[in-house]
Structures are given as structure tokens and as C-alpha cells.
Image 1 (cartoon, rainbow, N blue to C red):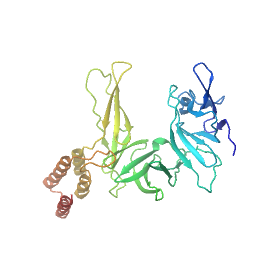
Image 2 (spheres, rainbow, N blue to C red):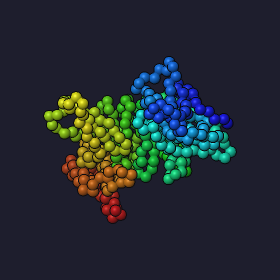
Image 3 (spheres, rainbow, N blue to C red):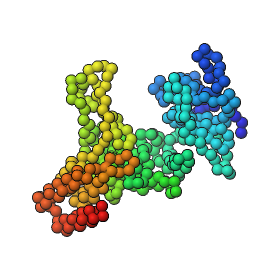
Image 4 (cartoon, one colour):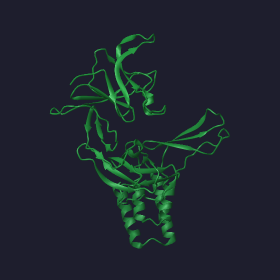
Length: 364
């Protein structure tokens, strides 16, 4: 399999070439870089992801470097570089004109009985291929094929819930969230299908082992507890409270929110200065008192509410914010009092909850 110095990328209608890097005076140096050049007549706009890759060289390779094939990823954030017929490197593209360095992310080797015939990023974007990174080892996990005509990065996320990693696929057409269990030793299969009441694209967060779904159109959020068998959210959609400073520098009350994985949000609002924006960084937390009150008002079974609240006690792994034990107990007993006061708590359910609490405290 021969090497080359340039490659046509059909998906982006561009040419990727390996050529000398020029110094400040325009003379060739002893280093080679990857360059991306648009083909004449290409219809990419200035806001296209590929436009950011055409302003500078990517990487710095020795003068005798040789590659078999090079392709850009669909989002133009990575290069797949085929060195020979058994090895492919994945590099991140340069982020600015001033910094041409690119970082090696992964090296993938074929099996001894296999040979690479070329590179192909799935241009139809209908496949999800999880990779499991453990130290310096990269394990390829079984793929997931979805029926969407074009899969976007906004439809896919990762969620670590109760010590299990899930690949979450959002299907706006079916108004569903499909959860695929991801583990290197088992097949990637769909284990849960959750109903979403929003037709618009949603954004995901993970808060205290709960999957939180945000709708920008309606300004509300729903949350799911995969420890329960329900396909519906634990409660009806609730508003997301985003506190902002109240001073006279802001020009309007409209707050724009951007969510960051796993449980953070950026709230921004214009100020009187045309070039300035007030930005607040928040960690999303649960209002257990409000959740318990809503669950009580909606007549959700007390046993389900008690189990939900008790799972929120203490800190949790992987950066999740665990509920405060005091808040959990106060929310739990406030719900107890309300149900007893209103006389709508069957004696059998009351006894079951008391026994569960006694067992929980004895084994805690």
C-alpha cells in the first residue's frame, strides 16, 4: 500500500495535503504539516466547521513523514491518519492560527489477520460506536445503528447513573430517550426507553444519578430515575430556576442558558455595555423540598417518593452532587405530615413505609 502527499476528502469537498511549513519570511522549514484547502466551487460558508481548519497548518511532522490516507471527521475536530495498513492515529485539529500543534488522542491497531483498505467517517451519521478508554488502552465496543436520517452530536450523550455508563440517544420524532448500556465486556444494547413530552431537541444533564432533560422551547426540565421501572419522568416538567444578579447594569430580563455536561449551566444576559455580557456559572442541584411537595400534591405513592428521597442521601460518585441528609429527612417527613393531615394515606402503605425506613436506618 503506497503513501501519498495529498488526499481528497469527499465528505467535506476539500483536499488535505502534507507539505512543508513556512517560516515568518515564507521560506520552507524542515517540518511538514497537514493543510486543508477548499476545492473551487465548494459551498461551505464562513460559519461552517471546516472553515476553521483552513487558516493554518495542523501538526508538525518530520521531513520524512509519510501517510497512506488522511480524513477529517464529520465535525472537523479530528484527523484520522492512516500510517500503514494496520495502524490509524486520531489527532485533534489545531484550534487557532497561532497554535498549529495538534494532540494525538488515540492509536488504533488492526487485528493481526486484518488489513486497512482505507478510511471512512460515516457520512450518513447513523452509527454510534462507543470506545472504552482504560489508561493507555482503547477498546472498541459493539456499535449501535439508529434509524435517524442524520444523527447529530446534540442527539447523543453519556450518562453515568448508579455506577453504570449509558449512551443516551434522543429521538425527537418518537419523543423518546433510548438508553444503551456501555461496557467493554458486553454488547451495547438498548435497556430502557423513556418517554419525553417535548417535540423540540432536548439537552441532557446528570444530577445525583438522575437523568435531567431540559427543553429550551418551554423553559422546563424533567428528570428520570432509572432505579424505577417507570418510562415517564418522576414528576411533571418543572421550571429551572437560574438566579442572576439584580443590578442596574443589565439591559433586559431575558436570560440565555447553555448547559454543560454533566451538571452545570451557564446563564448569560446582556448589560448596558454593548460589548459586555453578565455570565453566571451554576451547578444544577435538586430542590428536594419542592420535589417532595409536588410528588405529594400529585398523589404519587408515598413508598415511591420515600425510595426516591432516600437514594438522594449523601455524596455520589463521578462528581454528582448528593443530597444533604438533613434536607432529605425534612422533605421526607414534610410529605409524611401532609399525607397524614389530609387523611389519604392507607394504613397498609403507612406500615410499609415505616418498616422500610426502620430497615434503611438499621443498615445505613
